[in-house]
Image 1 (cartoon, helix red, strand yellow):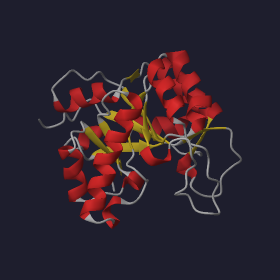
Image 2: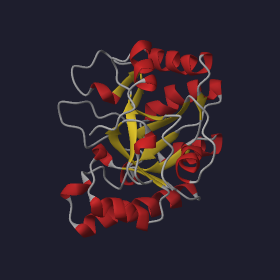
Image 3: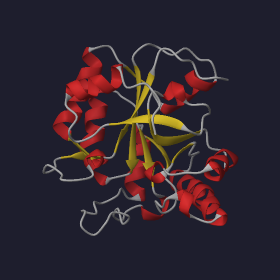
Image 4: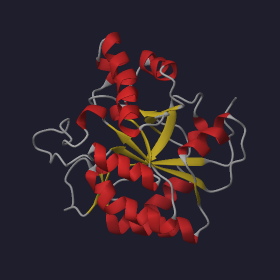
Length: 244
């Protein structure tokens, strides 16, 4: 089914949420908790419908109704500061969220970050299980957070399939959604995500989710450290065209 063109659906992409010094680089990897709380309050005040990724999929690809001002909240990498900062704020509003986990790095650090960049802690398997019981949705961010398009066919298959199996073993339930590390993928990676039985594949392509041609190349809108409420509102209301 062709995704509906209206109303536009924004799937927001976050990484770390917490208290940070002003970053000189990688600004899209940070969102200050104060601004994050302001964003959640903005959604509530102006009548946004914060829906789950499952609801978004069913609206885009199964013909279910999509309310105006619908938004999905996603968090890449599975940082420990999600548990400490983001989740309590989300719980206060009753908002759902999906967190994408790197299956081989649970309880470790973000080892893919360069040496001149801090390597923050990632959530442990125990934390993931606890948050799942509390209502957090989890998806796969591959096995080891590598650029899939640079790997061999066999390596891509392992990153896609093994991460699903590993995370389902941790959670004891299905892991239906996949997010490409760095937003990097090729046709094979996309097709393997579908073959593995995932429901969605999320990218770093910018734009409204409605611009997706299929469920395995869904665009998102990145929320960066520098985004104040005006910047977030601009992305929600106007940045719908597909780019990247």
